[in-house]
Length: 416
Ligand SMILES: Cc1cc2nc3c(=O)[nH]c(=O)nc-3n(C[C@H](O)[C@H](O)[C@H](O)COP(=O)(O)OP(=O)(O)OC[C@H]3O[C@@H](n4cnc5c(N)ncnc54)[C@H](O)[C@@H]3O)c2cc1C
Image (cartoon, rainbow, N blue to C red; front, top):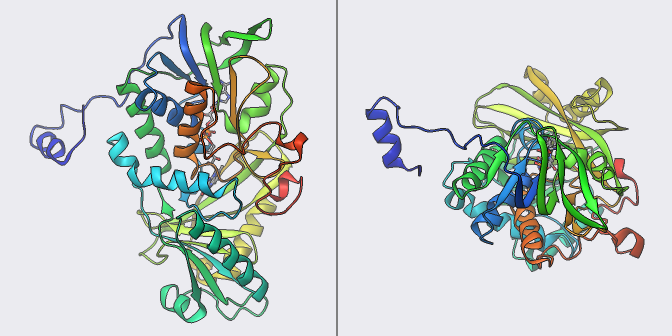
């Protein structure tokens, strides 16, 4: 079934009896050409592009829970391509271009909203750094504008411009950035992949890999053995645990990141705003809730919930930036498990096992990467070669010294 305005009107007039489920619930086949482990955003996008762009139809996605149960349904929905380094910026700009056509590509309303992102500047040195970043963005075609304090005051007058410690001196605006409805992205990719013949199998946990003479033959699962010529793993916060079953120790740690949403308020925050002095970012959902977050909890964990000191830290950041947030009531808070790499950048690569591929290390920035990550992983799985925008995301870059340390924080996953 294709979605269209005509279809909505027709269903409205005929009692909404014609809608069908967004995807099938198939039983696993004995074998597939390609098995994707993990039905999060990246796994589903990979399956979608494998089917749509690379013509691979004998594909399955195996998800241990339900679609959207992981980080794809837990993030703060920010999409942007305002990166600095050559290994990153073209990849994230490729992702932004895929976002711009996502709803046409998947025929699904994922509520992609290019409402802009402003990174606030609080010192002269920070202005220099953002000017440099803006230039890198222009070189990659991502756009970007430096805003003066007066221009910012017109756009976001509710910010605390004269904070004694962190006065706001300007901002870097990327107008094409914004937000997208996170679970709508998962559903759109799932439906698009299913429509093209991909089997999406929920409640199917991969419990082991069958490897013979260094070659992958298939996966052991909670629903039995499934053969596969190739397997792509995209399990985000579970990367370490899953790849350990193939004998690998990854340059990745798992950490918790929390997010928060307030009660619904009248439209106030025009786009995404990031505090340049502390770690705090905020946007407003279409329902009116202020959606915000900050730092990871800073200790290794697989729990999908965080602790109170970070709640306090995030809210202090919010109060310093926009004191009016103290009047809003907090509705919900939750956590997700982040796959924090040692340099803060991702990995999309083959492994030492013939036929086994890995996608992970997204830290807390992998939502915006979902389309490009899926496309690049599908490219690698289908052709055996990395996509041109993802050539730097190699697994061996840590031993070669070719790290992509966007933040300049060193090998400290808790600081990326
Ligand atoms: C609170 C929070 C806020 C964030 N905010 C942003 C943001 O604003 N912008 C941004 O760009 N990024 C953000 N992120 C990061 C982003 O959400 C992640 O980097 C990205 O979603 C990870 O990729 P994924 O969608 O594939 O992960 P997931 O949705 O976690 O998918 C992985 C899937 O693998 C499954 N799985 C695990 N083990 C197995 C197994 N053995 N067998 C089968 N399946 C398995 C899991 O159940 C899960 O569904 C945020 C994350 C969090 C938690």
